[in-house]
Length: 544
Image 1 (cartoon, rainbow, N blue to C red):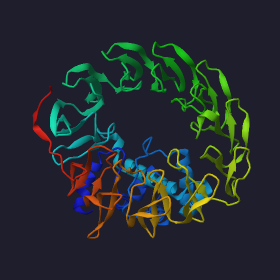
Image 2 (cartoon, helix red, strand yellow; image 1 turned 90 degrees about the vertical axis):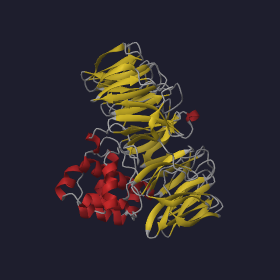
Image 3 (spheres, helix red, strand yellow; image 1 turned 30 degrees about the vertical axis):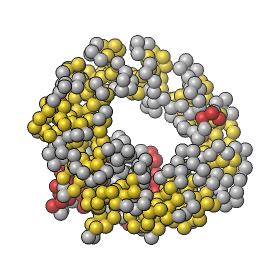
Image 4 (tube, helix red, strand yellow; image 1 turned 90 degrees about the horizontal axis):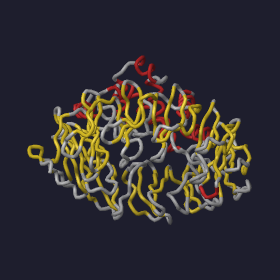
């Protein structure tokens, strides 16, 4: 293993989401382990993993993704992908079978590989499992890659230091983990026990809880906590508000209620501990899923069937569906996608069927039309279930919110259409995705550039961009290109001017913040859009 890779992986071993590990490095890691070790995590051999990467045309510079939940366990949808992968299906075949675009197939492949790495290196079992830490040339671990409430924090030895955007340290405290939750308080842990401190490091709540979370929102006076393996609710001075008697607690979506679990069943309680919804629902009853309007109820699951109930536990839509979509293009229409007996349709809040249950896949992407796939062909229909154009599509993806145009796929090539299927950009690109309503990243001959909706080239085809990337308000965007045979990150703008030289092995997105984190020469550093490095003074600190 190259020295640089080995040293960098020492830090990545602490990183929960594995973001910015390239495919080349991921395969290098996997090849160091035995077939048995890999097979006990996910049923793939090294040869099958390499074939998947080759068949999906995943390049060595492409990175893993951070859409990882539940440790190494694959979701039901990911299992569908895995079955086709083991059958040797290529990216186009899987795209057509599962009605997703090729970018999504690649993403799932990267998720699977990331989960293999999690299993191989026990990332979730390390002392850093709760937060996403990063390394620094001075500080060993960084909390946040952008400044939250004007501050960031890092660890050296047994201490955490919190500093501002000028590199001035305002707080030093001995603890294992450090997480600022709002401008006035910080959750810390010592020996796996959690508590709360103020900006000067004074204890507001001593560290005695097994878990401690702001489940009601960042400025709520209440916290969920776990004590003696049971969950309850405490206030900001540590007084018990709801007794520690529940087997689980989760966010509901407002500040008056919380999902609670007794045994293996979920219900809803209020902040006074009153039972609002009885403990009769399944695992998916854990968030404020609004399929219709603000007051039209939320999704619940019971015995494997989904429906919609209200806060009085009254049935709005009977629990008779295999699936109900929690979001919709236009909730004012009070309709949503549902699934029954393996086929999808559209229902309204009165449980009336608006689009019959005859489709494998439905994506409502405009106020007039939707994309449906009827097991053998995909096309656009209106809300009366009539075709609006004769052209067939493999896939149509949502545009940026409120956008007039949509990326679509025909014959394994991407183009752009309007909501009626009229072609705006012909189907000739290997990949297309919107940066905003007018600009897209386009992939042609394995190089990416930026074009506008009229297909004018804004940035030439000589870079690679992150699909999860961010186009700043100033028109800046992180990009990667080859420098002396090695792939390096830098920052450019829409005039193709280089704002930060291509010298970083990693350069996180700015998300319109002043600083972000980068890695060069195996060292982490905060860098601004001028390429200037933030100097952090850990020798002096002031808690005022």
